[in-house]
Image (cartoon, rainbow, N blue to C red; front, side, top):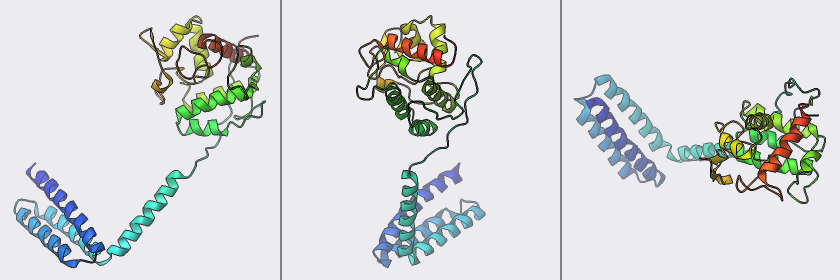
Length: 275
């Protein structure tokens, strides 16, 4: 423990000294840099009697090597650091496009499923949704899902769907949206988990929300910003296609409960579990 404490102490002193050295080297002021180097050397010598000799020699060698490098090539070192940071920044901000997931496995009760995992009968480009889900941007994917459903129903000019509009969404598009959510969430999110949960709750919206995390303690309806936008939310927690601001309010003229029932009924028909 004594050796470790001493090591941490000198490491902290060394980091501070090296920082001052780089600063002074940038100003081409050799006097302070040489003073700091001498102080580091004296500190090492004071602790040398209490340290393991090999440990002291190894640390001393590393420090001297760094001091020599930064003292003689400080300008080049600063430029190299800047170039490296700039390259990393460009790499991190470059948009990433993910490959589409494989086609979905047929449901036992479904007769027809799209071969193309991004298929759409409404000319919807599902690549943004696929990329958002693949990068685990759950909130962005949720909002993109709502946008795609409105467009697929032909209500882009209005921005929300009535109970009749949910049935206007092509079956192919409902299956594509469900497949993308299920694929990227390992079957935790999507229309199928919500459909199954809806059945086990007897079609009761309040119970459904208690089970999937849209309501707490049977009375506290969640606001949209309080949702669990992560990969470990409750089963069926996402997407929130039928509401946006609060779980007890629908996005259109109808209640969230009735809209969810209409959506899941359309989905059930799309996968062949309803006639």
